[in-house]
Image (cartoon, rainbow, N blue to C red):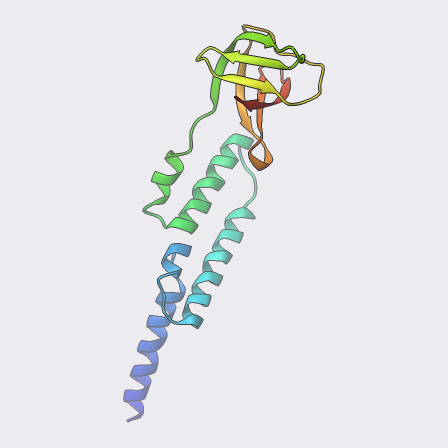
Length: 158
C-alpha cells in the first residue's frame, strides 16, 4: 500500500513540476488549479527577471532587440515570439517637403508622402525643407520628428 501511495505522490509531483515550469505567461493562463497557476506565473516572472538582469553586451540597439526577443519568448512562448518580434515596424524615415505657416503662426511640416505634422512644442528650433527626419514615439502617444543632426520637435499628425 505504501508503494502505491509513493507512486501516486511521485506522479503528482512530476505533473505539478511540469505545470509549474511552463515557458510563458500564455501557457500559465491555461492552468486550472490556482496554486499551480501561481507557481507557473512565479517561474515565468523569475525567467523574465533573469533575462532583464543579464550583463549588457553590444550596442544599445542590439541590447534592446535582444531584450525584446527574450521578453516576447517569456510572455507569448517560444513558438510565437519570432512572429511577434518581426511585426515591430522599422523606423519611419522621410524627407520634409515643405514648411507651412498658418495665420496663427503655427508651423506645419509637409512630408514627401503628403502627411502633415503640426508643431506642438514651443521651441524656436525649426526643421528646414529637404531635411531627413525620423518619427519617434514618446509617452502617452506623443510623436517627435528627429533630424539627422539630433533636433527633436514634438508634433501632432493632422
